[in-house]
Image 1: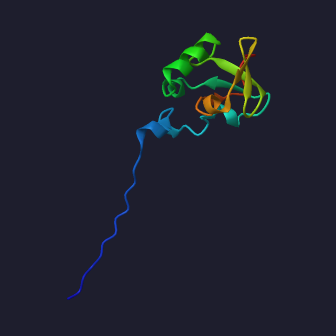
Image 2: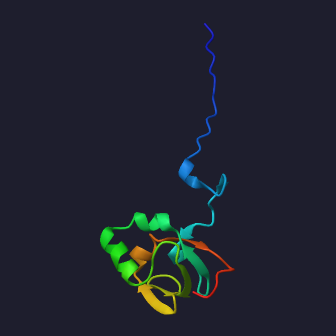
Image 3: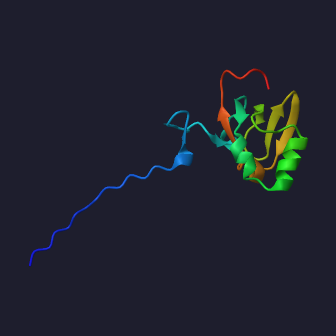
Length: 108
């Protein structure tokens, strides 16, 4: 008796990894990965994953969906400038906030 094995290759596409008309959203990174002086825009989806208390504190400090920022001190704690105000974020929160770096952003 001869047995035959058939191998199938399955490609799985996860919709959340696609953006901008099907291109991958490779430029969405944690805030803690930005370098000093880099500018970025907050990814609004990442704020939704934070605890309500953290979202409220960020909002009170001027950090909201799609706001622009500049990194003053990279790493943890992470110090950013938002609308001419410097804000310090602990590493555990900053690592959960995703941003889209932009070289052409106006001054934060």
